[in-house]
Image (cartoon, rainbow, N blue to C red):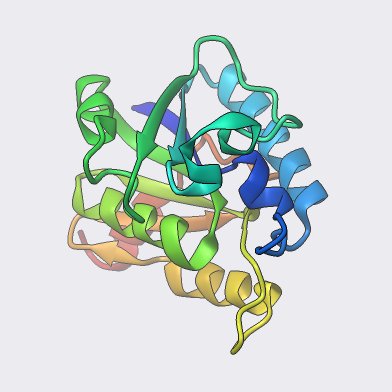
Length: 190
């Protein structure tokens, strides 16, 4: 099965914050984990896809770019979006279908918005998803800390399914490019 690593909104200003916005929690660890998983993706011969949000830094300048600490391979593909959903108004789904991608590994920002949406949308679009538990982040909200939001989504999305396809949540140290989604299919008699 062909695979892709999807790094969503790992942009300079979103991760680091600005005069009006706080940085994401554990930003240094996030960057380190993204780089680690990029290395695993290269070893697994997975497609590398970056998605940037045009709302970040007004869609221009250094703040809009993928964080300077992230090592973006030359052969990576980039899509820019205007919506929370990385698939809406972009060529992302078409690219993944054309490449016959059956398994997507998801990382990036922000957990409760773009990450959650991408995981759920990919499952209804015919792909199994692995969310990297320690590879996504967000900011504190008025109701919950960033850490609580991350923990909640790791729990809620682990085993989430849309009839035929599942999301699995695994740590970056695991063999995330060896998907375990068939275990869910057996569990649910599929």
